[in-house]
Amino acid sequence: MSDCTHDCSSCSSNCDSRDKKSFIKPLHELSRVKKVVAVASGKGGVGKSLVTSLLAVRAAARGLRVAVLDADITGPSIPKTFGVNERARGAEGEIYPVRSKSGIQMMSMNNLLEHDDDPVVWRGTLIAGAAVQFWTDVVWDEVDIMFIDMPPGTGDVPLTVFQSIPLSGIVIVTTPQELVEMIVKKAVNMAKMMNVPVLGLAENMSYFECPDCGKRHEIFGASKAEALCKAYGIPACARIPIDPAVARLADAGRIEEADTDALAEVFREIEKSREIKDYLKD
Ligand code: ADP
Image (cartoon, rainbow, N blue to C red; front, top):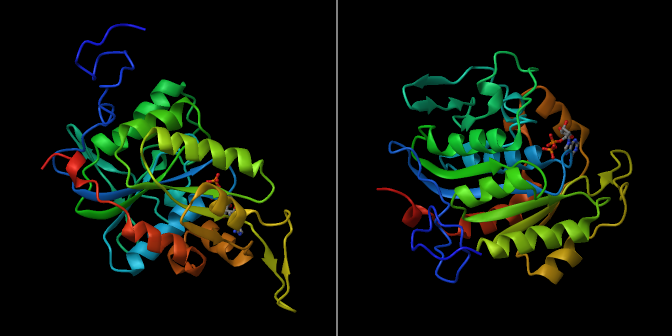
């Protein structure tokens, strides 16, 4: 290991005096953001973007000024879920977020691509760089709470995003059939290493409620949510049902009409979470 140079921004030594915040990048000087909550998952396709969107919708319904940063650069789905097809506008050194019908600010790779179905065939460093630029170069206008739709997994790209943006907390999204215990353990350990609290666990596709008899069927296996929250000291636990209506609303770009009650407990915990203003420029 190399010797400490007393300048954490350029030194590679991992000594005790390393400033844990030193990788954190500043916001654009015209941006204001009070809280940032990352929504993370062990793999793609478990409903991370859906949970991010529903949390944003709930926050907006509570009267908060809300933003969504879509850091899932290779699988961006946030603008489509909100029915936003606009391209983002930019001036020199700054990009302006687009807004949903209810005024939620958002920035996603899909707001920059010429065609929604253009693939992003970039290497990891470029992908992580783009996600971090959504934090540093976008002019976020007076945001009370920002949700980040993280790249899936615990690899290089999510790690860079985690290290570069000051977080109030993390919400983990899983499904019952995943290797869920291992994934939750990894996410909890990563959060601990970065000194960021895990605020909640959302078990998506947890059950299906029969519309005829009201009986709950655990299609992907028995729920592990409560047990995992208890085992890892995660304060809020949500079970989100498989709901064809919510899938239809997401597909139609009308997620702002969806019911967000399943996330009430997780959202209460988010409201209590710390503000990040001490990390930011005035
Ligand atoms: P991820 O962001 O983890 O890749 P998405 O949020 O994009 O996953 O979800 C994948 C697909 O599954 C989307 O079409 C979404 O609308 C659908 N989906 C997710 N959760 C549910 C649910 N609870 N009920 C019905 N459809 C769902």
